[in-house]
Image (cartoon, rainbow, N blue to C red; front, side, top):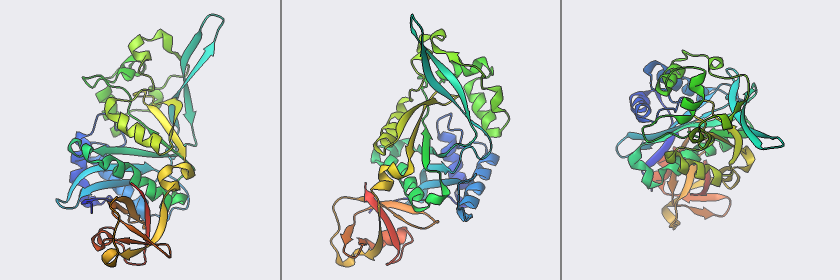
Length: 333
């Protein structure tokens, strides 16, 4: 049985989440480091879980990964129900046109007033990244989407952090964005977290011709930072596809998938829980969750039984806050 549990955030988690956010890479702008903004986000998440949402609006669902032995938070992730709920959403679309002499690549500014659900803010402490917990952290929130599909759009997107050099300089921002707003990337992130800057100050109105930029900037558009490559591979395994749009700040790629095509959702089953005291369990572990709004997920050996039942260790049922007869969602891990 795993000692790690994914659960919904609580206000009592604030100090530990603040520590996680403070250690997270610069640029995870949906996980604010400022105390006031972070408290507001946690409060917003609690209200979102409590709301009887029948369609996606401005809800934000924040989840934490807890080491239940030490009661320590080692990771977090979130879901924004509809990213355009508070205003337009901006991207650059990578495109090209053809002349008699050459093909000209360019970035076309695009604006969406009706944008979809986004999975956001995944962070796992470095010392826990080798234990395979990134998969638990990333995929568990897909189970929440499967349990509560009415809360989300039919399209799910994710934005992946763009390319940074070894000194953690954002080359895309330095090469493009800073020409429209002359502040360094760290100050930009700070202003975005404080809502001290309007996005229209940062966003051009006309295409940007890539061949007019330095070669090192051209080469990193739509590329991910090395620490983000595992996350991209995981999302691609789930059925997410690269789009031709990139983030306006760091140039990282946007991926998307249709909700009912996502592997962890499509291949999951909902079964009735049974205590495993009389049943031999699998040697493999599976991703399992409850089907409650007070969401909890972990990994566990299981035994599929007749009558659409599933046997789990009693300590896992307790961890998931599940009683025999309650519904369990399960898929291969």
